[in-house]
Structures are given as C-alpha cells and as structure tokens.
Image (cartoon, rainbow, N blue to C red; front, side):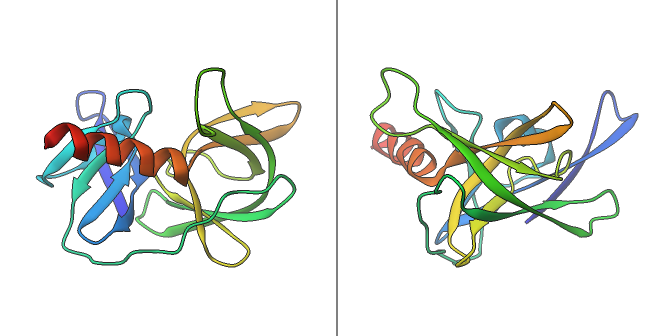
Length: 163
C-alpha cells in the first residue's frame, strides 16, 4: 500500500509504504503516522517502530522467517507513487538479550527512502518482514526489517491490551 504525505511544515514530500497483514489490518512504521489520512489506528507498538491500522482489504499473506543468505525482495513507493522494488540478501538476524523471539534482520539491497513500512518477501513470495530503516556502511546499503514474528507479537499485544 503506498503512503504519501508532507513533512517539515509542508515543505518536503515524503513517501512510505504499508502492508495488509491480516483481514482488515495493515501495518506501517510509526514514523509514517502523518501519512495515514483518516485510517482508524489500532495502536502503536510499545517496543518497535510499528503502527497498526484498519483497512477494508482482506488479504492474509503467507509468512515465513527470514534465513541468513536467503534472497529477499523489498517493496516501497517512489516520489511519483510508483512501485519500487529492491532485491537483496539477508545478512544477519538480530535477537537482543531479553527478547523471546528475534526482533529484526538486516538485508543488503539497493533500497532507501520510500521503503519504510513496506513488505519484504522471500523467494517463495512469503512475507518475512517490514522495513523500518537503512544505513550506508562500507559502500553497501544495509536495510533493517522487523521479522513477522515480532510484528505479529506486537499486534497480539495491542489486541490483548484492548480486551
């Protein structure tokens, strides 16, 4: 799902993406909140840059865990609302101390602005993550994505808190 909005007092345009992850539920990065024009927000994750909101779409994609060395494709949005893709390889899976499940993974790909909140899929087309940041290091672009296990755990936490 493309997201587009104005930032910095309306002087600069910015882009991001979102992904339907369950019937009627989509996710993007919390830093993309200003792009959601009236979508009913379910909530923001407490420990991740994730924002869940309601949508009419009912897709429920297949998910999988990323594999180090595995090929991935990331999706984002360009300045003219065009779909952008970036192919890459998973380099590392990060599980900080104190977490029961992995938090994020790092993949190398030629992506960047406009990919925030967008899906990352494996070679079989299964959703493995949601992009949240990038960093240029040693002539390579490293992309950071939350694993779907983390995304689903954060959503479950919000749903449990609402009950």
